[in-house]
Amino acid sequence: MRAPFGLVIASGLLFGASGLAQPREGRRDFDALLRSAVQHYEAGQAAQAIGELERAYAMRPLPRLLYNLGRAHERAGDLRAAIDYYNRFLLTSPDAQAEAIAREALASAQRRQADEDRARAASTAADQQRALEAERVRAAATEQQRAEDDRRRQMTAPMHRRLTTPVIAMAGVTGAALVAGGILGGLALSAHSSFDASHQGADRDGAYTRGTAFALGADVGFSVALVAAITGVVLYFTQTPVPDEATAAAR
Image (cartoon, rainbow, N blue to C red):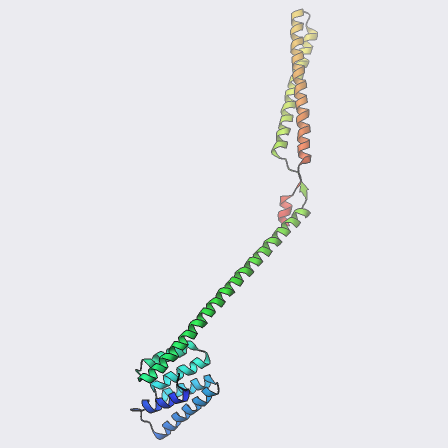
């Protein structure tokens, strides 16, 4: 069992006073500090006891006071300071009984300190986990809000249809077919004029054949242009309108 606080102080006075003679007034002050420290310790006022023990130790650095300082710090909840004082006391090579008491106190303080460290580490880990979870929730909420804002901007932004590649291709085919039809139509008209102006049978037949072929080609060209134009218009107006990017970005 651990020795009572007051008795350890008494033992310190009995076994640590040799070679530290003081005037009677100084000894009275020292004894008064020890009695007051015991009273404060037993009343649960560890901080006051620590202050008085430190003053007493400054007056007479008795080894047993180191142990009592450890006890007082342990009661105050400062286990690291208590462990330090217990170790300092053990370095003074106390007698076997005092050493056993101090080692028991040291082991108990170290166990309690280890328990506190584990509890503190677990609490810190839990706090970090909660912080990470809260951050994930905030990030998810922010992303959801951003998506909602994007949808709202798209809904309110002016819509337009795009000139997609198929639409542009149909426009190109229409233009090319119109040009080809126009050229072939002009050649057909020229052949018709030659047919009207010719009086020989072979020339008239040749002009007629050319005119017929050119007219057929012009009809095909114009037909292709018409189909391509209709296809391009259908593709343009059946596509899904998209918001105006410049307007949406400005919002």
